[in-house]
Amino acid sequence: MRVFEKYHPIVLFSYFAVIIFMTMFFMHPVYLAITLIGAMSLNLVLNGRDFFKSLKMYIPVFLLIMIINPLISHNGEMVLFYMNDNRITLEAILYGLAMATMLVSVMLWCSCYNSVMTSDKFLYLFSRVSPVFSLVLSITMRLIPRFTYQLKLIGQSQKTIGMDYTIGSLWHRIRCIMQILSILITWALENAIETADSMKARGYGLQKRTTFSLFVFEKRDGILLAVIFLLFVISGIGSLLGSTTFYFYPALTGISSTLKHLFFYSVYAMLIVIPVGIELVEGLKWRYLKSTM
Amino acid sequence: MPRNVTINLRMIISSIIFFIIMPLVIYLGVTVLEDRKYYFVSIVLVLLACVPFFLRFERRRPQPREILTIAVMAAISVAGRCLFVVTPAIKPVTAITAITGISLGAEAGFITGATTALVSNFFFGQGPWTPFQMFTWGMIGFIAGLLGKTGIMQRKILLALFGVFAGLFFSFGMDIWGAISTAGMFSKEAFIAAIASALPFTIIYAVSNVIFLLLLAKPIGEKLERLKQKYGILQ
Image (cartoon, rainbow over all chains, first blue to last red; front, side, top):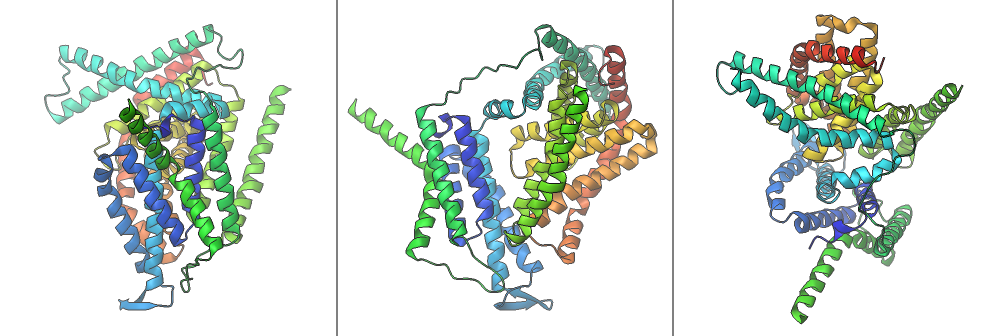
């Protein structure tokens, strides 16, 4: 499956930017529930079983934030009980719950972002905004596997002259590692100058840099980008009209369920559900095609 | 003449960001957002604060030798972060960034720190913490570069003091500010609670920074000095 990640990087990046922005912004219970469910289902679709493993990390964070808020904040009208002469209020507990939902949702969205927006896509996007810095980034990315390979070589050749970092006393090991690192840095810097001279010889900086990429902006990318933008604008208008207004302090405001608000909730839900929807629809199509073959 | 023009343009854009856009963001955060979205406002502010540095780096059109040297230092510090992944809070990143700043100048220090944060998060996962890390590590490199220019960083005691300072700075930027802005609570109690709970990490940061700086400053510094003299870069 995995169709969503085949879209153009600019579509993917705008989608996650919009979603993470709105998740941070809309502290309304309905919106928070929608974004948490959306983030969890996309994670499930993208990461499969690994998602359940990562829950081990998210649940403690969630609980921690949820508990800390009522202990520190004593605002609110509905006092549940007193702890060391401090009021523990219902509002503070619910605000902690909302905070925890928001933060865990942002983390979950970021984890989706990480599996969809690989570094090549990021570099492709930012080579236009900041060409020199993204060149630094891509060279750095390239150097890391090269360094690990070179480290192995240096380590092995050091072994042959009695500088084995895997045996001996702690002091000996530290000395060996420092020696290996020192050799690596000298080699890396000298090598860097050679690469730089080679770049210069090939005309770096004379003209605008061209970059090779396999990303083509197709019609479907344009359509999806337009849909994302439209739903984002409608949600923004909804927020201005008060659909996302919710106060925890001093007393909770009610959740309105007028037709107007229900419309804005569903617009937000539509925006959240886009990637999962795409994956499901494509999956069904594939099933259907297979069954008619 | 063209050099003056670019410097002026840079100054103008930086001043617009620092004196108009950033106060505007804070003002909007207080009024329109009703002083509630601290987390969002701090991320925007941190990103804006990074812009002038990148702008300056872009506009100066650095030579390939300079780009490669910075990339090498960033890659070494990313590799260091990966190497020490099992030990929480003990990372050589701060030390390597600071050494780069001292030897190659404030700007190279900033770019090295920011690159390290961004690239290492490609391995460890990007998140709302990325801009904070980019800015704090970048600033540590930048401040080290400014201090390095005066030559006082050659003295071991001052270098160790800088390690302690960088540990406190990083702890404030990442743990304390992060915790408070996420929870959205700005009270004396919350500050004390955050500082107290971050204290063990702050101490580990500071101590490991001092150790790494003292261990690495001389060997790496000498190599960078040699490179500068041999090839005449970043003078």
